[in-house]
Picture 1 (spheres, helix red, strand yellow):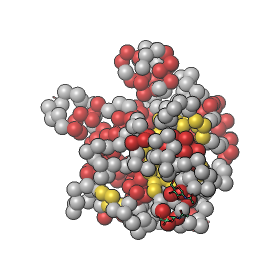
Picture 2 (cartoon, protein in one colour):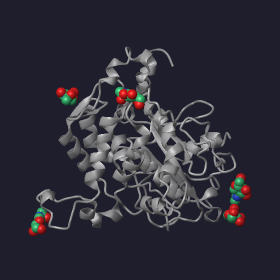
Picture 3 (cartoon, helix red, strand yellow):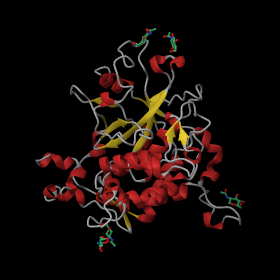
Picture 4 (spheres, helix red, strand yellow):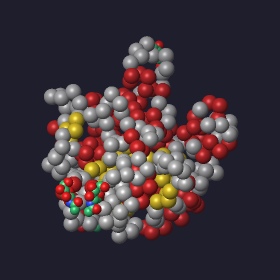
Length: 386
Ligand SMILES: *[C@@H]1O[C@H](CO)[C@@H](O)[C@H](O)[C@H]1NC(C)=O
Ligand SMILES: *[C@@H]1O[C@H](CO)[C@@H](O)[C@H](O)[C@H]1NC(C)=O
Ligand SMILES: *[C@@H]1O[C@H](CO)[C@@H](O)[C@H](O)[C@H]1NC(C)=O
Ligand SMILES: *[C@@H]1O[C@H](CO)[C@@H](O)[C@H](O)[C@H]1NC(C)=O
Ligand SMILES: *[C@@H]1O[C@H](CO)[C@@H](O)[C@H](O)[C@H]1NC(C)=O
């Protein structure tokens, strides 16, 4: 962790000894009036234009045990320290336009319910008894966490922040206003910095959280008990709950879910605190629908996706993004053989339909309307070695 090259890892810039050499990177900071993006404005504008054709093809690290894979678009994460600033209003407008451009097919009839407005009509003039939908709070909170938390402000490129933080959707779960609720319930985990507080319980210690991996681990350690409804101590795993109980509001009310509902809730909690995350999974082990399905989570950090499990039933030993992939129960050569007829297919859920690839839902097999990315090759490469 020494040497100039570590400046690529912007989070490490917060380590005191590296601050001097990373000065350029940390000047990209949002404040009360401006939202900063860690990239050149010219890149940003070009990508705006090309957003529809952007692809995120996976490539693989040439090391024996891969822990992550990188997106190919190199210009997306240049680290020359250039910043692009938008006023808060411009940032809100850009975020709104992004979400409006990428509404999943089955959500389109419910544009107004989601909070998308006709530009000719002022949303503040809604008739009595009506408010805007979830888009407004979604944008406000997604930008607010950039102002508040260094790991969120360091996320680059902006396209990743839009698709995997700002995004209110995962698969075809009911759309709801989970972001303000999760923020309110979990914000104590990331309380004001005060390392000399008298009360040295876990949560006070967490006031020292500075990096994205720390924030991920903190959420996976504490969110399951903090979010538990009154009748249970913790949100837990209960098999066979999808799709009856898998949207975030249902999971919070019932206090349990199977893998899909836990993955969606975990992704939403991560997104709430400015951490890019997505649901990933297989609709059928061994391409065999009778063999069952599984969903888990990927977190984007330092130009690469890292996979992990929600630890609802493992809060004594919570998963984090820097574990050995082989420690995950499903990551083994049996499930990810090199037999093309029989290996497990894995898809990541997206918001942008940049390609014809879709996220196959085990509970809605023929629906092709959730955009996806085929990440099978990565899991085969990594897990066939376990
Ligand atoms: C916020 O950041 C912008 C862009 O760097 C700067 O112009 C502005 O003065 C800053 N505002 C405050 C209150 O610091
Ligand atoms: C704006 O709202 C008014 C009143 O509801 C409606 O008549 C009009 O068609 C709307 N404009 C657009 C562009 O939808
Ligand atoms: C930090 O916590 C201690 C003990 O509760 C308190 O006395 C002190 O004022 C706090 N410092 C700040 C900067 O809030
Ligand atoms: C599919 O999975 C089921 C349940 O595990 C198993 O009984 C069956 O043999 C499998 N089919 C094939 C073709 O492997
Ligand atoms: C698929 O792979 C599994 C695990 O290696 C094996 O048990 C099963 O027999 C294979 N089925 C086929 C059809 O090759």
